[in-house]
Image (cartoon, rainbow, N blue to C red):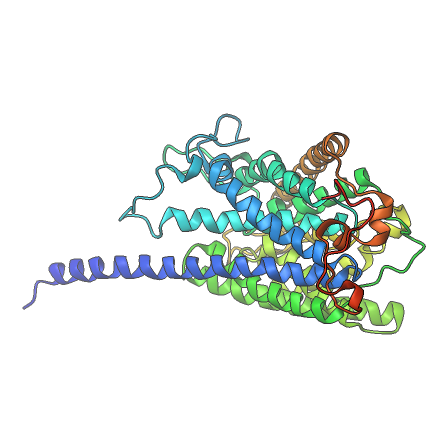
Length: 447
């Protein structure tokens, strides 16, 4: 008879690297999907602005991709995932600076730490890119790049440490994840609420666009918006299911939940539009998809598929109403970052306390008989992120605007930031704008 213990040992040894290889392959794929969200966001935002600003808007997203990833490797990852320096507030900035000590393969790890770090860095990229939508049409590109670098270090990395850095062994992580016990599977706090609160602060400090509330400022290309929404939806599967950090049952559940929330978010937004305005629009469909995806981001690993559909309905309907608040209160959130990402992030983060199911996450929300404890923890996490991000961003934008200058001159804004800053136009509709790079009066110093 064969030695069964020996056979089991050989089988286990063979399975281990196979599992590690599978998890590594999935994380590599997920990171690539999240990277695709950057051009997706550029298309989405680019179609939403006026034609004289589309290139600048897309450049702000691509610029954020470049700057944030460089800063992330140099110091951002270490701040977010280094050993806590005290109070669960920030990681050691020197521990992994420049990815130091991370390049040697660990045979016991389920995946290389470098791909995990790159994956997390792309989360930071999307978060910074989202803020650009709140201040579209009126910002200097050079100052935006400086803002992206500083904001990553001062705001994103600390919040990521709070909620994403879990304690293990001798490693001490952030306070939200480990002491508070808040649940956030893929970034309702660090990504959505964080970017939405930052967008609101930046829009308030920089002020309204010339003609806001008076001139029409409709999306110039809804085809780009729809294409961008599709790319974002595709990339979001890497964003959410990739956060399972392995090719696992959890990743499968999260994938399904992400799909369903996008669907019901779309339907709910269209229902609000149809009832309120009499028309269901393509712009509303794209916005509803994104609203549903925003809300399911924190809750995708906590709710059942039915719960995911309810999350999408809640986000799609609430966000469809919330985007109109800027006209009531007078703040110029150019591309509805507040109405979709801040409000949707709040909905998705808080609703975990109501709809979480122990069949998925091991924790029951209020509606599943788990009491109000988890709801309270979610409220604290959402409120702390909002307050910190808003305050820090307002201070940072104020300092930059009064030192190097953040907003372009009114004349440059009216002429169009594409021509003034980049000496280009998105569409060659006239021979005067084709090929040559015309000099624009007042363009010096606007970049």
